Length: 465
View 1 (cartoon, one colour):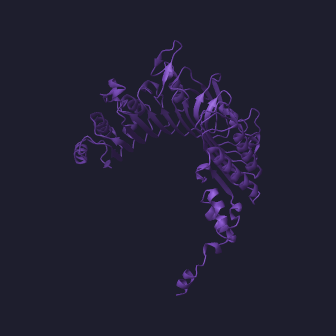
View 2 (cartoon, rainbow, N blue to C red; view 1 turned 90 degrees about the vertical axis):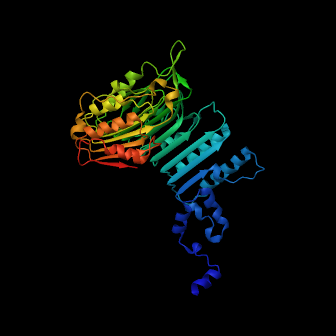
View 3 (cartoon, one colour; view 1 turned 135 degrees about the vertical axis):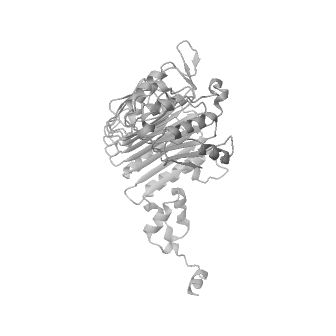
């Protein structure tokens, strides 16, 4: 009865909570919404100004339908400026700013830089910046000098669909450990300008689109770097040259690469490298000096060979191979490899799998993933792929391979032949897991056929999902 009485009297139990608890609740809301709680009661007045994390996105900001886009943006920026000026705590742990508009004026970019500088004065630790413009931005947006001299910054993310640059004379980021940058790269903003003086940088992502004309050489020197991801696309639908990445990261443990115009990658040392993922794309054409277009440029083989040789001491390797990309002849000896994931698109370069098995004597764990994209129309000569078993059984099958997982399995003839061979020749195999896709037969028929396959290991279990 007492509880019922309190409910009927309209007791505001939430407002009775301590400030720390209320601030924790508000931290799950966009900061703009947290600011609106001041209208609830005097108890909530300016409580949001004690939040350690501030995040602003102009898409979250409600506007009057009579306002123009320029007026709406101005109102949003005014609100953010006011929020930073009213913030009670001297320190802001995390500052996030996401803006998507039709066009940024010079004045808009200046106001954005002022907001960045203001957050830096609050000794920010984590900063996420995201800027998108529908109209093409001809002039580069230069981030403020103070951003690259912030002693407290540990984690910086910059996403932009236009040319966004670090200042030409960068300072030092002594505490920065994580840096993710995805922008339109041009001659004005070579990637190394963002991390030139980051002595403790451990995690680096370089992504976006490339539009270089005068830059051929990109230097990535970071002695403390442990994780490096590179994901790049050409600004145009074709390319006529490639770039050289020189990577000096002796502490690097993880490397991931996805690039359509495959560049030169030269590693000074990969002695610490344990895990690598490489996605070979086939999305754009190469144009030679005479203006002729080709599906793949003649230098691809050499560059792919050098890259794989540079990462050949890894223990885990993931290769995503699209048609007309990586071929078996590029594969180096993989003496330390224990885990392999191979993604094949439609045309199944089975000879690549054969070579990888042959050159990986310590392999224990194998994942095959099929991605079916109806590539036959583009590469009709690949539509009838064939599995040709190796002349000699790979060492890893005889003594090491314990687990095989096959994803996207449709039950095609070549898929069945590969699975049958692996089951028969793997003497110490414990498990083969089949993850079916759009099967060409019933699951019961598939299980029945697998049941007739000879198994090299009596302990092996075949699982279907």
